[in-house]
Image 1: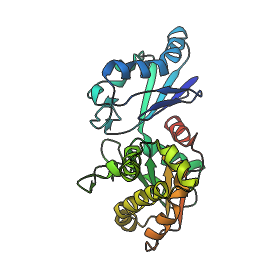
Image 2: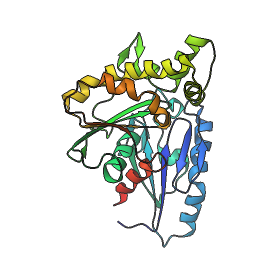
Image 3: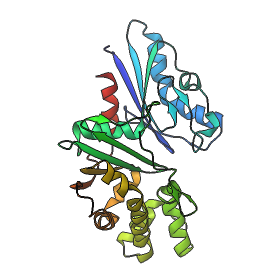
Image 4: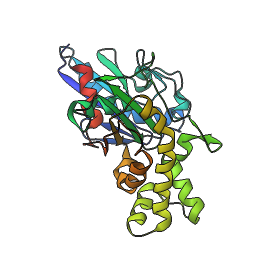
Length: 280
C-alpha cells in the first residue's frame, strides 16, 4: 500500500528520533505521564494533519526495543518503559485510527538498514551489536533477519549472566560509567570518558578495553556457532568504537568465519533506512 505521508520513529532509552529531524527527550524509566508526553509530542502534529486530511493516507513506522508485541503494538518491557507495560502504543500516544501503525525491533531494523544500504552489504552472515542505554544484538543469515515469534531477535544477549549480574550491567551506558567510577571515583558520561581516553587518561582507555573484553567473551561462541562473517557496531557508544577496536580484534581473532569488524555506515540514518523497508 502506498502512503502519502510517512513518519518514522527511532525509539531509544533517552531520545525519540524522528525522520523529520527532531530529537525528543524521553525517560524510559519515567512514570506513565512522562512517557506519554514524550511520545505524544513526537506524533501529535503528524496526527493532526492526518485527521485534517481524510482523503490522504498516513502511516507511522516505529523502531522500538523489545520485549514488545510488534503485531499488536503493546509494551512488554520491564527493564525500561516499565511504567507503560501492557499499554497499547496507539492509545498511549493518542494516534487516531486513520493513521496506520507498523512496528519493528530497533536493532533488527538497524541491521536491515545496514544490509540494504551500508556495511552489511556483500556478506551472507552478519551480526550487529547496539551499544547505548541498553545492549542489543541481531543477526542476518542469507538476507533474513533471525527473529523469534514475537518479532524480537532470535538470540538476545543483554540478560546473559555476567559477574553476578547481567551482561547489560557491564556493556551499556551504565556499565561504562560505573566501571570508570569504580576506578577513579569520578562519575563522567560515556562521551566524557571517551574524550579523556583520547587525551591520555589510562583509566578511561582501560574502561573501554575492559568492556570490549567482557563483550567479546560473551558473543564469541555465538559468532562461531552462526559462522558470522561481518560484525557491526551501532548505537551512540559505538561512535567511540575505535577505543575498543584492538581488544575486539584480538579477542575475536580465532573465529574462522569472521572477516570484518566495523561500525555501521550511517549512525544518523541506519534505523530510518531499515524502517523504510516496512513500507516497501
